[in-house]
Amino acid sequence: MNQPNLGIYPTLESYSSYSIPTPVQNITIQSLPPEISTQIDLALGCVFGAFIGDSLGSYIEFENSISEGMLSETLEMRGGGPFSVGPGQVTDDSELAMCLLRGLYEGNGKFNLDLIAKYYKEWYCTGPFDIGKTTKNALKVYKDNPAFAKFSIASSKELNKKSKSNGSFMKCTPMAVFCRNLNDKEIRRAVSLECSMTHSNLEIQDAQVCYIKAIVSLFRYPGDRVRAYNEAKSMARRYETKEWFDDIENSQPMKADHKIGRAKIAFDHAFRHLRNESNYFDAMTGILRLGGDTDTNAAIVGGLIGAADGYSGIPKNWKEKVKNFKFEGIGIDRPWFLDQTDVERQVEYLYYISPYSLSIIAEE
Image 1: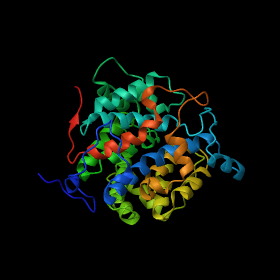
Image 2: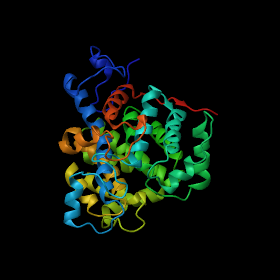
Image 3: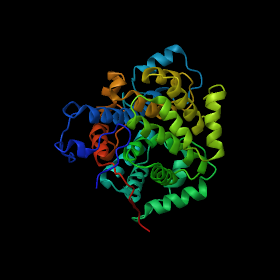
Image 4: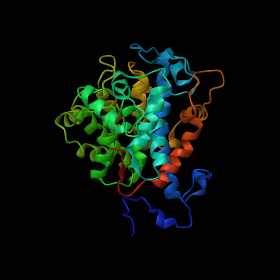
């Protein structure tokens, strides 16, 4: 059966001479048809856009007054900061995104919640050098049980229903790549389920659906920021989410130095940068200049604007540092499944196996 062709997106059947890569094949973007090359560039821009924002922001995290000198040092991506990360090393934001990416990647087109949860559990067991309260509440109940997703969802529902923190947004960009061929109902279902493993608040889940929808729209209609914004706004179901969009259109930008972990801060600035046609560099300098939870805010803004500008629109020196980071005595040594040098390959593979219909797998 032929798959639906969404927007200008070419179906794989249109390029039958190009085989879907296995995890061990090396496929370069330049070797692909231009339409697919563009799509992969946007997918990489989305995920690495978030990772790069995270790495940049780690240098000045928790600072509320950012001088021009501090901003200049931050943009050099020199490492350091409160956790003494290496140049280009990411924090918990992108480490959790790598767990999500690997769970989706290994699911091979199926939405396997327990595979994703397995890596969240493994990450928690490493004793992360940074972890948010809401995320910790959900993951601290880990058990030697294949139904770990069930336990984390239950814990999140009990402990986190009032939390409107940014800890789920910061890790969600791989979901956009996975969901790129799904219809709106399936996008809502998948995004809400993944979000619920750490963040059970319904407003946060609804807002995250809108964020992912904007990115998916940018994948389908490259460069059409107006359409992406409008499609995201149309996905809002909760009154509070609709208020967030109203504030973006009618109020001043949010400050970032009060209740710094609120998801609304990054949501507000991400969509403002989308509407204002900001390029990736300007979006990063804009959000970093505000201080506060800089790594997470920059990750969330970076994921959306990275999808708009593409991987090719991100400064080369930032990309090289993040995608090639390895612990060699500088920074923090992390386990094998948090290998930043493998992210590019996994994103490209996830692009190819992203499903046209949602099939959910979870242990009872």
